[in-house]
Length: 412
Image 1 (cartoon, rainbow, N blue to C red):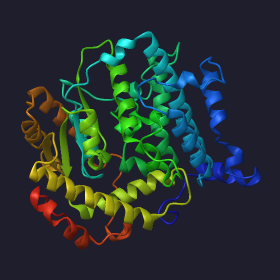
Image 2 (cartoon, rainbow, N blue to C red; image 1 turned 60 degrees about the vertical axis):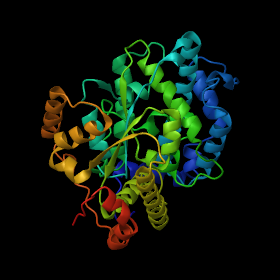
Image 3 (spheres, one colour; image 1 turned 180 degrees about the horizontal axis):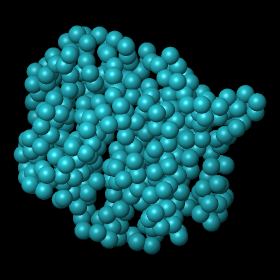
Image 4 (spheres, helix red, strand yellow; image 1 turned 90 degrees about the vertical axis):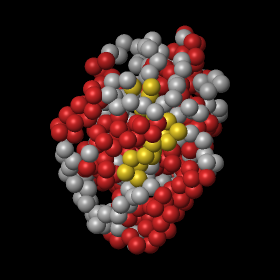
């Protein structure tokens, strides 16, 4: 990675200071008890009582997951800035849990909020899921998980909307400050919808952690617990408003459709499709960049092997199960090439498949959004399959049945 990207001077210097202080762990220590006490104290809670962070009947043994996660993180080869970013996320997650618990005690009716027939975008990473997510969020009849809302579903006492936006803006846009090339891969802003793995970060059970940090010892994701916290966050944000159709998104749902449909049986799933010779290497480059934000040690060969195996199996399995009817759910499909050529028509076709009309207002909003946010606004993410450990012909051959089933065009 060091041969591909040059760190900004401020990041390089922050990381280098660890040498004079005994290492990155000495500059930014990560200990579960200290983090718990700091989060509790910041909210005026008893620093020795972890029950304030417990969401009874929601996501199980959160404390065991948290302690395992922190121990694994502390053993990871994170640099100073990486440890700082991760420490902030852990503290925010704890504070969010405590605020959710307090709100739930005051408003138990939150658990009765209906989350009905959400529209869920999933598909291979780098297959247009993000721009599709943003375009679907323009539908006047839906609600999307805007970063400022779901990162702080219960704002701290005395903190107004402007402060929430400022806190969210700092955290979301910091990623591109740490490595400017990240903005060309994935734009993060306080006013944009965020992926579900970000929304449910405080479960300490989801794939946010394995994505940003790689190997994490004996900590493992717990999909059921993660989706339970996910639902509570949506219910909390929705409480006090008319129930809405939520637009949700995470490429990882492709790997866990049964779990998703167990949590949201009436979900409408829009699956994106793109040439695997494009999606596989781009997924590796994106994941490598996300990890590079926090560590100097990124295993590119391991990432390529893992991502190739996992997404090849997932795409082939979903194609087979959709064909033979062994997976429940209502699906719509969007090919990347169609989305780039005519987003209104592509979305209209997917909406027709899931039984939702595309309104004139939504179509006009799509055209305006695409006009004002042209592709490559923050630079172009250029890559080849070989640069990131893939043979294009081999990747396509392994997924020949999938490509045929969804008429996915091959790209140069």
